[in-house]
Image 1 (spheres, rainbow, N blue to C red):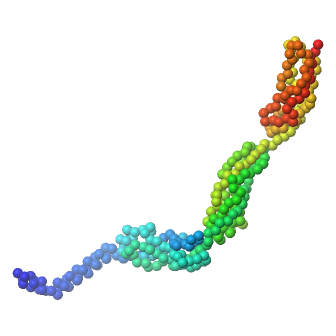
Image 2 (image 1 turned 90 degrees about the vertical axis):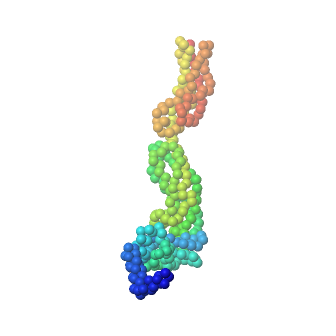
Length: 306
């Protein structure tokens, strides 16, 4: 039995070996034609690795073109998120360099090319710098009002960023709009770092980035001289013979829209008792709300007709 199997295996041995080789070759051919090797280009965001401590990397390039080859199925299974392009700054110090682009990608891909192959990178130390707050006020308060003071929660701010950028900051400004306000108000004011041309400088952190500004506003005060009116009431059936007040006029002060409608100031009401014929004494004035008077009381004398 074994001899028969051996004879069957050795019969036409060369033809069998050739057939096996052709079968393997055909398998590779078929598989290759179904999943051929192709080229593909990915546009990958550039990253910077291993930046020295207390430094930042400054560069212009943002995307790198990475050309890879692999079986077609790989380009279906993998996307841009699986490809990485980076500049490795390990061992570099502060300065400007031309750095080669390194890549990483899944196993099975082959790197064909990278564009650009090198990029210019500046390693800049991160520094801090103090700078005063500058406020730019626009608009006007309501007519009859004026701004007396601007109170800031911080008089100085800290700039944090790359040395070249921080040194390029000339001013840090914030805008305050009055918008016809008539009373003191408070508002948050974002702060912006600008260069000598007035352009905002990006990449510099301002701390704090927002301050609180209190705009103190007072109404325009006016002064006016008005007469004092004696408010005296005689007993029933009697008449006032003569009444006199000292001083006869007083000086009143207040906001214009209130003062302009006041033509006089009265005393508090004065009454005679049934058996009184004369009155003499210090009497308070009836002072309107929001108005101040140079005196609070006046001397009044009055008598009744016989």
